[in-house]
Amino acid sequence: MDFDLSEVHKMFQAAVREFAEKEVAPLVKEAEDTETFPVQLVPKLGELGYLCPSYPEEYGGGGLGKIGDCVLVEELARICAGITSGIMVQGGLATYALLSHGTEEQKQAYLVPAVQGRKIAAFGLTEANAGSDAAAIETTARREGGYYIINGTKIYITNDLICDFVLVAAATDKSKGTRGISTFLVDRDTPGFTVAIMRKLGTHSASTGEFAFEDCRVPADNLLGEEGRGYKYMLEALNGARISHAARSIGVAQAAFEASLNYAKQRAQFGQPIGRFQAIAFKLSTMATEIEAARSFLYRVAWLYDQGNECRKEAPMVKYFSSELAIRVAEEAMRIHAGAGYLAESVVQRYFRDAILFHTTEGTTEIQQLVISRELGLFD
Ligand SMILES: Cc1cc2nc3c(=O)[nH]c(=O)nc-3n(C[C@H](O)[C@H](O)[C@H](O)COP(=O)(O)OP(=O)(O)OC[C@H]3O[C@@H](n4cnc5c(N)ncnc54)[C@H](O)[C@@H]3O)c2cc1C
Image 1 (cartoon, rainbow, N blue to C red):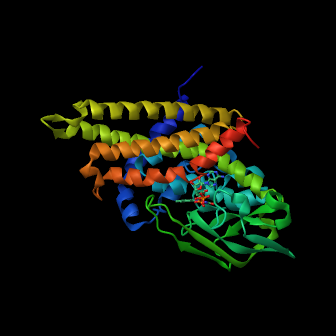
Image 2 (image 1 turned 90 degrees about the vertical axis):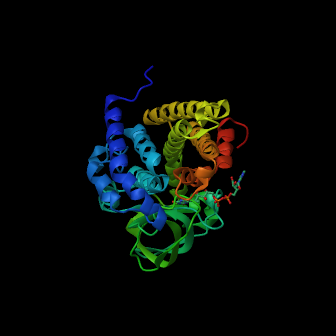
């Protein structure tokens, strides 16, 4: 058994950490304050080959597998979860189906520019009446000659204002349920496609919003894979994305822990650093232990995934475990910082606002528990 990262992954980790600290950290305050994703990072990450580290080298990816993806996401999230959201979607949810099921023409037109940071991608599944119940989508795509006509509205979509194209799920045959859902590559400048921003509690530097499609004509060549297989493609992408999501949670938990450890050593009350009080020391011990456990679990699941295991049980497990851990750790960080943590300029209040999202994205905790229960054979 070898529990360590390979030499290649360690080098990648060191390089990404340096990039995150030198190139990303200075952008965070402005990006969060103005609720703007710093788009200049995308071509920079693309040039370095950091945008889609798990994808094959023939498409410009790093060939570093899911482990590489988790290294990138964890290191970026240690600096800023909001910025990481946009990068994660680009290297996973929005492009994975393209990699797995796209034609060579589609890959050259959309995947390669996304990997190189020349195009920004989004993933459009969720709707007002279809959140956890993603199969209930009402967006439709009707075939008309050489085109599909898309009508419908998507909400909460990451990279909304900044995307160049979106992978959209739409019903091509409502009578067939999930087998009547297809996926389409839709260019941002397609007439009838409009975007609107949605403001949020946290991850302010991520661009999130609503996509509306009104008689949006998309060339039939932009159908991804086979008609009626889109729901399956989306679930495949979501399953892998849950592992990366766990890395994001652990990155934020690590940041909240590091800030709390420093604060507990510096802040003195009753004549001594608060870290000397057992109540605070035990909180930090628990935080450190749980982060170690989650990280070990994460890289074990990423390794399994890279071995070709679908991780249908393990991906929701590690997503659920790590996201709830991040929420707990971020709350403990707030308690350790007390009044100082509650101030707007405090970094831990950002971790707290960001972490609370992790219960929801890539499927809520309850949905992960549902999937795990099914995998345990408790019900269909
Ligand atoms: C910041 C942000 C970014 C996002 N980015 C994207 C994106 O890029 N693309 C995209 O397509 N979507 C995106 N989403 C949407 C996200 O995936 C959904 O919010 C999520 O799937 C939950 O759906 P919902 O919010 O409608 O909650 P609901 O489904 O309405 O759930 C409400 C509550 O009911 C519970 N619940 C629902 N069904 C069950 C059940 N069967 N058993 C037990 N409990 C249940 C849930 O766990 C939750 O606690 C984003 C969301 C946010 C907030």
